[in-house]
Length: 287
Image (cartoon, rainbow, N blue to C red; front, side):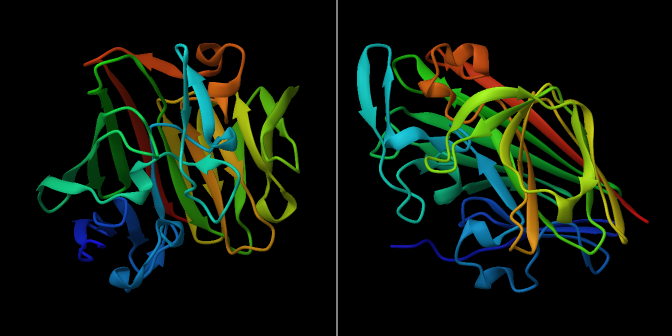
């Protein structure tokens, strides 16, 4: 049975944030005055998927987990389908489950998701996100604690959706791009990529990038955004037929768990009781 739809609203001067704790803790909307900063729905209760929202948390892994199976410390595991019949599992488990509001006031809130090992992920963990709105920024702080009795793989990230406007533009300083097999949609090899500085209309990416330095800057005819995070990788998704694009700070390369050295590509091993943290800051200004 689905949980009852609920909303939580935060405000700080001209910024307003609406959350759907029951819908994967998703951001139903972020507005600067009446202008959407992220993909936003004024009827937050009408959303029936986090993929229609302004963004959600990626945990305990980001992007694709190849063919819904992996081997970890001598044991084979499988994961259930969770994305439109795709051959891979996507984005972890936190985006598909309800979160609990632990505390909230006018401009900040703390949400929690507790995962008990199941067919989607075989290790227990607890995830806590603190959200804070200021007059010119949204800050997110995320902590994942391994509550399993054994060491577990772990990764974190965020999947924000930005509205595509006529002059939407992205600038990000990077060093490398992971090429993607168009058939499997999994990364194949790393190629030099000195950066991105282009109108979104000219980009066609669904790739993970390494060597992210400084802040990613997103600008259009209405807003100037500055996105920074404690995470070293950036996934950029610019579907040409959609009215949005995604710039996603993440802790590891797509499908890192299947690489020869997952740790070298950002995947963490958390011992029982160990925690990993991440932070995200989106600064917002009118043009």
